[in-house]
Length: 623
Image 1 (cartoon, rainbow, N blue to C red):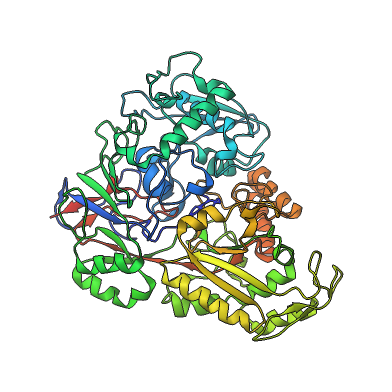
Image 2 (cartoon, helix red, strand yellow):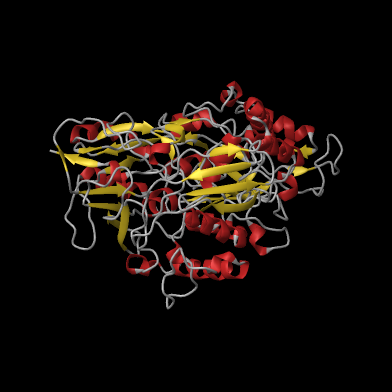
């Protein structure tokens, strides 16, 4: 989304179970390929959630602490469709056949954009209309700092006004001329039309109709009250299935239950009139406390489910890194198995505002030295069983896409403890391999430790990461051991995904919340809902997704150029941005793991999505 989880911080977390099996049957846009066996309607498909990452938030205007693939791509979008759908099969890009809107039309030197909606309906019978798009914009304007994808100056700040041109068309007036590719993929992509039935501030109020004048969202105070009401309702997880709010959907599914441990059950939305009407009778997302628990259940061929549902094989699951050698046995059980990589990059965060180590982390030379200690190729071989790709750039080389250049595959800081030690010594540090390196030369001149670093300050860091994923466990343990060779002491702390999401947040040095030093999500930044791989969500100064407090005016200018360059110069601007960021290291790069996806032998229609969205409405069983 950009989620780590795409985003961010706006990081839009990549779930190990986000997508289906490549090369299998159906693609997108309502197209279903022929499959062996006779297609049947009905049946229940079971989907494996990422360990310790159940859905926890249903309202699409999601805040940073709830911004995850588990909440967005695997939950909300089943119920509430974004204006534009992204990921044409496994390829990055917009999928117009699956979108609520036709391709946007730009005019007046790209200062206006007109969107025409297709004929879609909410489950209460109302049309998905231009007014619903306006409702989203109004709510966002009044509550933008609560939106995980908000970037100062970005959407909705760059929309001067909107006007409904009838029921199904809306025109946005922009504050400048923008790169249409960027604006479509990174701004319009953020819109999720919301039903006017939600435009109220209490359950005691009757759901309003689109034709009513003076609805609350038309004033700032009213829009704030509506958001506060909906956000409060979204925190009541036990009411999701019975709620009169959340039951109004325009997606292909309706939620019938969500258990306390995160098991979500969906049935087809019978009022859905979009492409790919569900053929399954039920779709269930299963929670797990660990990779081992998921794999044991997968190997057994039987899964448990609450509510008296029948037992069944896991329909779409994943193979943990430590169990990759056992994938052959799964094939013999009848599973189809293939690798998948999301469109994003993997990293871990330095907190530039931490009062103790922030001054050290702000030194580019230190970040360069530390990056030399990350053995990406070694980790992929030893801990990912070869199922991973190194990360060298914020514009990833894989999956194949039209945005990356050749430098995306070139390592600017190859693994070398020798180089790391040499860089530290050259910048005023007394390196003590096996001990603790200390600052020997105070000051901010060449050859000195840098501003804010005291004489004798030690290279000691705390690094938190989520428990439950072996590749992250092993790679962080290796980093701890390797860092000792350069005299850097790392104290590792395993925490829950929820702790990671809540603790890694923008902060000021004097705040208690700024105590975190290094944090690893154990998950990639996936480009969603900003699908064009620019950096305004994660690296621009002040962005809510910029959770590690990074700020560089030169990088800000390069990011701005990617949004404003005319189409003829867009790729050059993107290359300049990417190649500056890959060298500046606002984060530390680490390998992006692939996922070995398993699909039940009799399940068809499962196809990969570059951004982690799932389409169970395309899935069906065969006999």
